[in-house]
Structures are given as C-alpha cells and as structure tokens.
Image 1: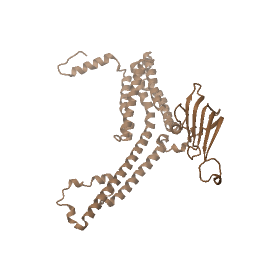
Image 2 (image 1 turned 180 degrees about the vertical axis):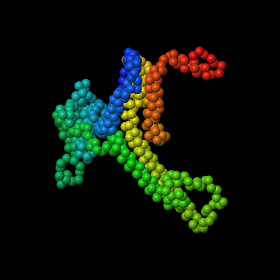
Image 3 (image 1 turned 180 degrees about the horizontal axis):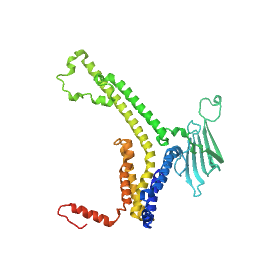
Image 4 (image 1 turned 45 degrees about the vertical axis):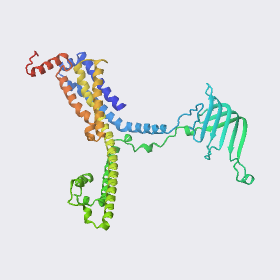
Length: 430
C-alpha cells in the first residue's frame, strides 16, 4: 500500500499546507516581499524529489522482498491444513491415513460418544479399526498430537503377527476388547511447512529493475528463437512460403502469401496428376495442411504467452518509476491548488485532494489495462496518467502564480457570460 499511500499523503499535505498559508494570508505576505510562488516552492520541491528517490528505492528493493515473503507464505498457507474440525455424524479425513467419525460431542468440546476410527496409516488399507462407546478428545500441550482417551470399546486388526506355517494362506483378524485405550494420532501433517523462498524468485513481482531488464531481454531472445524454430519447421509443408522474401518477420511473411480463395484457377490441379497418384497426392496435401495448421497454432500460442509475460514485466518495470514520479506530480498539483483555494484544515482540501487522486488512480489503472491488453505500448500506457495530469499541474502553477481565482464563483460566472457573448443573438453583461 505504500506506493499508493505516499503520493496521496503528499497531495493532501501540500494542499492543506498551502491552503492554510493562503487562508492566513501568509502567501500574500511572501509575495509582497518579492518572493514568487515558484521560488517559495523550490526547497519543498527539492525535498519531494528526495522523497521520490526514497520511494523508488522502496519500490525497487523493499517491495520485491516483501512480495517474496508474502507470496511464499500465501502459497504455503494455501497448501496447509491449519485446523482439525471433527463434526458429529460426519467422517473426517483431514489427517492423512485416518477416517474419524464421532456420533455425539458434548458442549465442553471434549467428551465424545460412539467413536469410529479407521486407521490406514500403514498404507495397506483400513486394516485397523477402533470402536468405542465414549471417550475424550484432547490435544497435547505442544499441539503436535491429538489424544483420543477411549472407554469400553473394541479394536480390530487384520494381518496380525502369526506365522504362515500355522495358519496356511488364510487371512487373520484380531479382535481385542478394552475398558480404556489411548489412541494418539500425529498432527504433523496439519502443521505449516515452509518451502524454500528461492523457488519463488523467478516471479516478476520479486524482481528489481535490473533483474526485470535481464528477464525481458531473455524473453525477447526466447521469442525470436521460437519464431525461428517455427519458421524452419513450417517451411517443408508450404513450398510457396520459401519463395517469399527472406529476412522478414514470420507472421508478415505469411500475410504476403496470396490466399488460395483469392485465386481462381482455370482448372483443378488434380487433373494434371495421373489417376494412380491422384488420391495419394490429395492425402499428402491434406496432411501437410493439417500439420502446418497445428504448427502455426502452437507457435502462435507460444508467442502470445511470451508477449503476455513480456508485458507483465514491462508494467512492473515502468511502475517503479511512475509511482515515484507521482510524488512529484501530485505535489506540483497540490501546492498551487492549495494556494488557489486558500482553505486549510480537513474540509475542502481533503475533498479536492481525494478527487484528484481518484482521477490519477483511474487513469493509471486504465493505462495499465490498455498495456496488458496490448492496446498501447508499455511506456505510453504506464506514463499515461503523468502525460494527462502534467499539463494540469503546469496550468495550476500558472494560475496560482498569477493569483487567478479558479475556484471563485464569480470567475465562473464571468467565464460563462463571455461564452454566451460568443453565441449569435446573445449579449450579456460581463
């Protein structure tokens, strides 16, 4: 949240500070002493630039590490069973190798009745079964085991330790009655197991700008290699393809081939083939077309995947710079805006500041979506908010330097009257 909270904080702080100074006529005193607004903003702008550099360092060095920690932990949590919830009347299979069912559970969450435990931990089927009329279910102090303290039940076990010479080839089953029996089950399978974080370092969210550049270069090389391999594998299936100009893009070269539907032959080509070879030639042509279609489809899918991966990394690369420059941009909007509205506190400055930030946020997200949709280049889509808001910032600075009442109701009234005077047959007083 820091890359979004920091620009918003700078925008609100600049509007509130300059608005409070304007409301107390401190800016008027500064200007009357011969210090222009731009000169007064210079040291603050220098401070904001230092903050922007700190934001870039944070985006480039801290956030990738935080993403690595967060994504690896989230993956481990998704693949871990964090709790054991045994409900009455239902079999529970959360513990690997066990199926547990209890008939009733008292309000103390410990006393249970009509217990059935299928033990398949030996990986030879449910060869051990425990039945009990009542008991208690508790966890060990360290939480690593669950203890079923059972009373008045039976234990059934198949394949008891008996020599085959005594029993022949017949299967054996042992049944034992107990008045009290403690069944201890290991819960290590339910514990959180952490994977090595190095397995997640290949994600673009965990890279700094230098690593992103290297990864994008590798993707471009892989893409060029896949195109070259696809072209070399495609050439034998379409002889007319080899007659096209060499050294141009695979897709552009395909587009230059005249479609068969656009050419009307004088006669079918099969008429020139002897009858004994005609069906064989048709089968070979169909096979070549089918193979070429599969090859082109596979190559196109692979290239699209490479393009999507490349765009994601370009978005991550440019966002490290755009989010930092947003601190400077929103300061250039907030400082003159506060000087114009001349209102401090938490009222109008908050409303105006949040409004401008929402506009900036929406434009940024639209530019990012256009980039990921391959509508705009990454450099244009990610800098779209800056391109659209920078003229507004320069306009605000110009208006604040000239003490223009942009937010005055009378100013808008005069502007509306001037617009009406431009219309034919409309004459109003300015």
